[in-house]
View 1 (tube, rainbow, N blue to C red):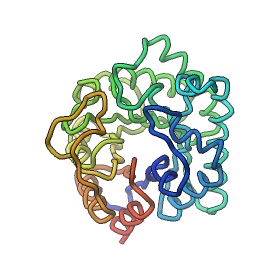
View 2: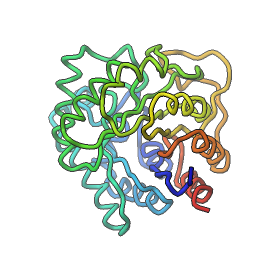
View 3: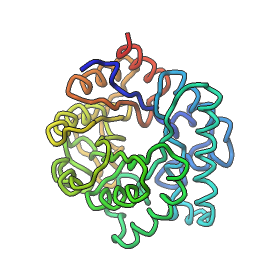
Length: 296
């Protein structure tokens, strides 16, 4: 595979905002990066711009935590549409300021706390809330990124509703702690893929987990589909040891600097990945090193 065929995604947004001094509380107890849409919109634009400058060809709007359930906990359930559109406005502003040809993805995320398969609601409620999000996002987005999904049926509904919009749709699962090939809900990648195999999404990915879990996952995905596969990891490798299934971030891990992260991404590309980027704690420097390696 020619590395020039690889599409570069952006890196972590919420964690990068925090690195820049924006107050971004724990995702388990707050509306996470959505607060920055209200309190620091210029910083959101600046983060998008830095990723574009580092080589990102796809930028994901900062709407990951803009869901009915999460906003309702802060008394902001009526602001789903407003903040969704604001996130897209800011991503578009960054693209326009950069002068680059960049696709804007809208996140179609877990409706409740990340990694918590036990909090995934019944299908009718999933469908209702995803329809609310997609109806707002799809007219403005270049693609819908169903991401960080922890359960097969959750992913199916998110992708089904997204495909109904007519947009391009990418489907991305998260993986569990330090357990290779397992979603937080306990299904294997193969089992989750089988549930969604009938859906004509444009790409299958794995994200928001340790880089070495994605290194293991890419060959599995490549064996399941002839279509594009990829991944965008957190800037860590998972190490053996116990962890709390309700808090997969409690794993033993070692951080990955830009060079080590780019090593991992090169392994993904060698295994067939054509969509690569970063998730939590990856920074513009990580993406810039990946770009340098792939583009020479």
